[in-house]
Image (cartoon, rainbow, N blue to C red):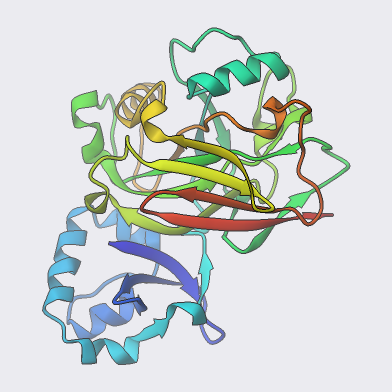
Amino acid sequence: MKLLTYKTQDTEPRLGFIHNNLVIDMEDFGNISNFPLPDNMLDLIDLGFEIISEITDLIENTRDVDFEEISHKIESVTFLAPIPKPRKNIIGIGLNYTEHVAESARTLDTSNELPQQPVIFSKPPTTVTATNTNVLLNRKLTNQLDWEVELAVVISKKGKYVPKSEALDYVFGYTIINDISARDCRRSGQWIVSKGQDTFAPMGPILVTKDEIENPHNLNMSLTVNGIEKQNSNTKFMLFNINDLIEDLSTVFTLEAGDIIATGTPAGVGAGRNPQEWLKEGDVIKSTVEKIGTIENTVKEI
C-alpha cells in the first residue's frame, strides 16, 4: 500500500492512500466501510502491520463509485512528510557503503577502514520536512551544505534483541530521506550539529508498506542537483543491511513502532568530489529510490 500524509486548502494534515491514481482519505474510507481507521500515520502504525491486509481486503470489496466522495486528485493535494513529526529522533547510519567510506576518509578525516559495527547517529524530529519544501542554509552555521540520498525504514512494533532472521517482521514500510549534512559543523567527532539542523531530513513523498517491496536490498537509488546526477547506486551495496541494522540497534536500545532508520548513503556526496561541491541558494535537489518515488527540495539561505 502507498500511504501518505497530505493536506488540502480545506483540511489539516490527513492520512491517505493512493488507489487508482487518486488520494483516498483513510479516516473517511473507514467511515464508509464501517471499520474505524485513524487520521494520521503514527496511529495507523500503532495498529500493527496486520491492519494493512485488512484495509487491502476492504479496498478490494469497495466499488469505485464509493471512493468518489472521499478522494482527491493527486495534483490537488500537498504531500507532507509521511511522518511529519516523529516521536523520537531519526536513527542515522553513517559510512554504510564501501565507496562512501573511501571518499569520506579522503575528505572528512574519517577512518578508511570499513566499520566493524554500524556507525550510529541521530537527527531530531525538527529536521523533518516534506518534498517541495526548502532546505534551509544558515550561513552563520555552515558553508559546507551537502546531500545524501538514503532508503529509510519505518519500524512496525516494539523490539528488543531482535535476531537478523526475524528483523523484517519488525518493518512497517519504507520511504526516502535526504540526510542533509553540514560538513563543517562536526564537534569533536560528533555529528548531531552537522546532521540535526532544521529541515535537514527531507522525507517522502510516500511510505510504501513492506508487502509492496519484495527485496529492499535491491533498490536503485540516485540523487541529482540542478538536474545533474551526483549519486547513483543500489541498496545491495550496504555494508550492514536492514536485518543487520535492526539486530544491532535493538541490542543497543528498544525499537518502537514508528521509529525511523535512515540506512546510509552511497558515494557521490559533495564532500567527496574534487573539487568539493556545496549546496547554495536556489539549488534543486531530487532524491529518488526505486519503487518509492522522488522527493524534491530547494536550498534557501536564511
